[in-house]
Length: 349
Ligand code: KG4
Ligand code: ZN
Image (tube, rainbow, N blue to C red; front, side):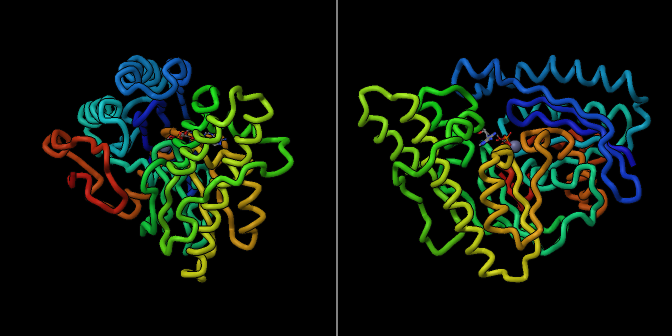
């Protein structure tokens, strides 16, 4: 089976080809274009700019696919149908619809969030993760903790009530006068600081649930910056460190709480843009070394079409008919859902 996948939910355009060889998800081809340069001058993603850029990017990428493959080689076309920015999603979805229609192949619609979790399966056998597992999605748009009883079976335990972790990194970076995206820069600035100089709040640390909140932490940092007439590099480094430690404290505390409730858990999957964070990986290794820990390869932490293909593979394997569209009437019905939640129908808005 060979799948051609498209991702365009935010500011990355990506195309990938994945095939299965004895149940190993073999990534054959992958292109990712990050629009960081175009958005950084605005200090964040501008939806209109992102959507406009997806068009020429996708045309170029599909031309490369055309050079390498015969279109009839693809058994399925897959595309991210939500959550994300609606105009960005529409570029990918409409392109995928046309390809599926012309080739007369089924179109697999993929939820971007489950795809982040399944990014740990790229180039791995399906047996790579032991279940039950906990899944933590930490990206620019989402922070969710999940229980996975087995492959492709998700139960959402908790979510952020306001900012996502990556969003908090990006906003704190902005407050400190650092560039976009803030995550990699803030984490770099934190390296070398020897202790926590500021005791920032750990929002919802003691709340008896698995939800998160990061906007209060961001506000605490705003107030801290206002105490200084000038932010010296040393102060910036120390704030970055203290912010990151507060975030990691909350994340690992909620995971520990979940492990108490679900002691049968064997593995922990951490995925999404923030899972590239080296300090997060260190802390989680230290705290959860008894579990099987699964992080995506660094190149698959951010948005990419390879994870969309991996997720599509599972939809096909488990015959999730609700996400496999075929025929012109099915295809024409598809509208991406910018707020598509895990386990909910894409049609529910
Ligand atoms: O998964 P992703 O590429 O896009 C979304 O689906 O949102 O995540 C992007 C987010 C950004 O907020 C970025 O600042 C953050 O991931 N990020 C990081 C790191 N690398 C990217 N955050 C913390 N540490 C990093 N090393
Ligand atoms: Zn993402």
